[in-house]
Image 1 (cartoon, one colour):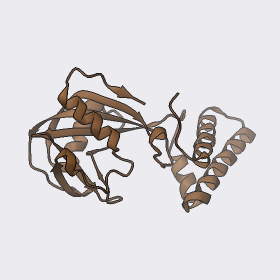
Image 2 (cartoon, rainbow, N blue to C red):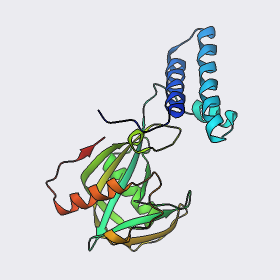
Image 3 (cartoon, rainbow, N blue to C red):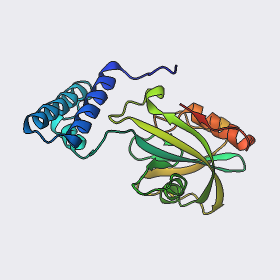
Image 4 (tube, rainbow, N blue to C red):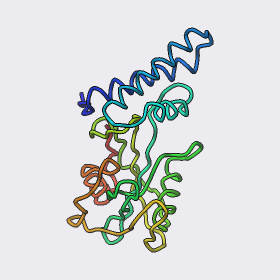
Length: 209
């Protein structure tokens, strides 16, 4: 069994939020609605206590999540040229990561990854292989929402690295030159190693968890 590396407060906060979101999607009784809304507030209060985020801000974010609660999907692309890996310097937190972002509704995973690469880097690439599916609970990714990360091996087609409104810089790196300020939570050392393994052997199976 793969160990959950999240702190208990975030695990509890997420679980209570998921119960409240799913409950609000199905109940009609006014008293039950109030109970689930209170669970939503309790979840926000727990997360606020440890992160400093405002309770009202968190409740507003939770209200934007509708229907049965499921993990979000993060798409990432590993683009290589001459065995150098394309990476972006994220404006959001200054870390370096493989290009990508949240999947949009209606996205096919491969084409969504290709779109994210183009938008963030100016590079046109084609997704050719699934490298892995990663659970952010297993890498200590302290985000409010649970997410699965899909990483694709992508073939470079054309274009030159060009920063976007989401990126400070875009560069190719040798394997031993990956920046130390990697990788926050958007890309991990394991995911980079898995990407190089997939590049070296196109028959290798996708990894998961």
